[in-house]
Amino acid sequence: MTETETTHFGNKDVALEDKQGLVNAVFHSVANRYDLMNDLMSGMVHRLWKDAMVARLAPPRSGSREYRVLDMAGGTGDIAERILNASHGFAKVTVSDINSGMLAVGRERAKEWRFGAGAEFVEANAEELPFEDESFDAYTIAFGIRNVPRIDKALAEAHRVLKRGGRFLCLEFSKPDMPVLDEVYKVFSDEVIPRIGQTVTGDKESYVYLVESIRKFPEPAAFTAMIEKAGFKRVTHTPMSGNIAALHAGWKL
Image 1 (spheres, rainbow, N blue to C red):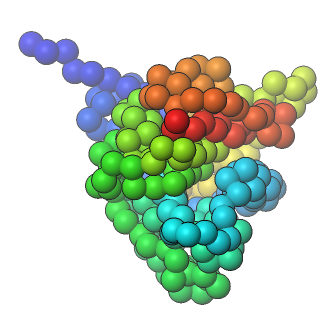
Image 2 (cartoon, one colour):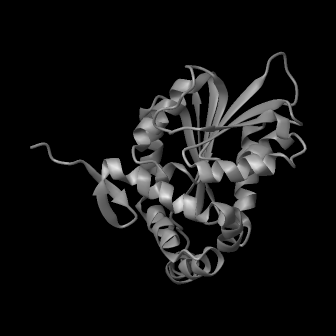
């Protein structure tokens, strides 16, 4: 008999083929309050991290051809709106997410954006993107890649759909490396975040999973090696807020 391949779902071991469905259930449950929870959990600091990612991307405001960005796992659209605003509507952003509930929130919000006409919303799996080779000038993903069952496949797909000279930017949680902060952050994550989740969304267990998924995610040096293995060059990572989060960047050259 062939042994079933497993992976982690938070602190649990699950069949690899089952993880995506479990992750989908988490985000369907919290979609309508997802961004509010991010504000509460981070004291709104996640907004500064996302602003920094878009500033690093520096999308052009003019040019001889359309500038196309794929924002993966970006269902609610907060990264897409930032990119559109930063480019004064010149960029075109494809917001892609495997979770239809998250995309529904983003589509509705985009109706109110100043440059909302520049966004499209596509339901897709990060491991098997429905886009042609070398379709995009940039690929962004914020706090989503740790939920992908096969991160190596998602990185390979990111590399495939980027044009030569294309930019890869990934914002993800990391592990605090400052004395005292690391202990405070652990207590906050274990005790406070699940309680906030229960109060705001009525779903404590989803936020227990999200805390556990952060701890299971590779440390920056290991994740850098994964990005390089996917074919990206000049890979860097920039710690943020005492390494609570990190911005990973690379180029397809």
